[in-house]
Amino acid sequence: MQNALFSAFVAQLCMASLALAAPIAETTTTAGNAWQYGTGGGVLGLLVLILDIIVFLEVIKSNRPPSHKIIWCLVVFLFPIVGMAIYWLFSNRAAHNSGSGYEALP
Image (spheres, rainbow, N blue to C red):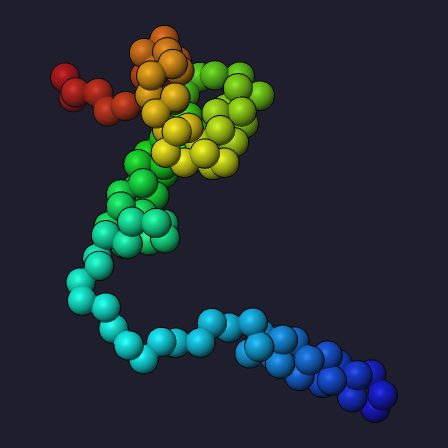
């Protein structure tokens, strides 16, 4: 009985902390700031996310040693825009291509 009461108390405490930490929705709307320049959201944020996922997949599929894969993934994860640019410029992608792409049927 006490264990169930304690777990119910902890659950209510967690829900209360989530309710207090949740952002309050603003009732005013701004006129069309779809790019949301400084907030990391919007169209630019989606574009960076898609390009970062492409880089992660390319790194994972490459024939690099696992330690190099981890380092490249961390660079791109910690510095999304700069890390992606560094990867595309300095990673020697052609030498580490695993060649696991599609091949033509004979």
